[in-house]
Length: 97
Image (cartoon, rainbow, N blue to C red; front, side, top):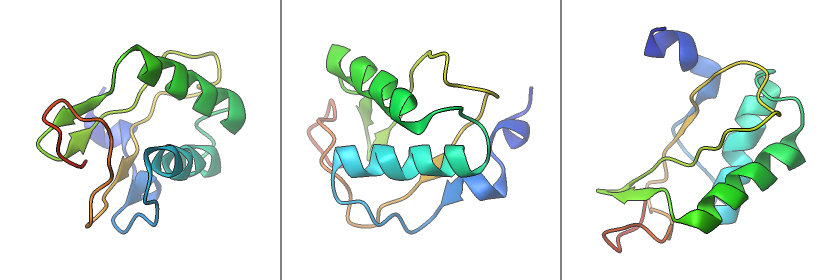
C-alpha cells in the first residue's frame, strides 16, 4: 500500500489550532472521523491515550506519531497535522512537536 493511499488531502491539516497534546489528538481524530476512517471518535481517542500512557510517541525533531491498534479503525489511514508554534508532547528530546 502506498502512503498516498493512506494519507489523502482531507487528512492533512497544515494549520492546526490545538495548543495541547490532548487537543491535537482530538483535532486529528476528527479528521479521521470526518473522512470515515474510524467508527467512534471517543473510543479511538481513548485507545490513542492508552498507547500514550505506555510512553510518549513524541519521537523528537518536532515530530510526534500518535497511534494505536484499535477496533475503532474502519480503514487504515494516516493523518498529518502541523503546528507552527509546536505542542508540548513529552517528546524524547524535550522539544515541542
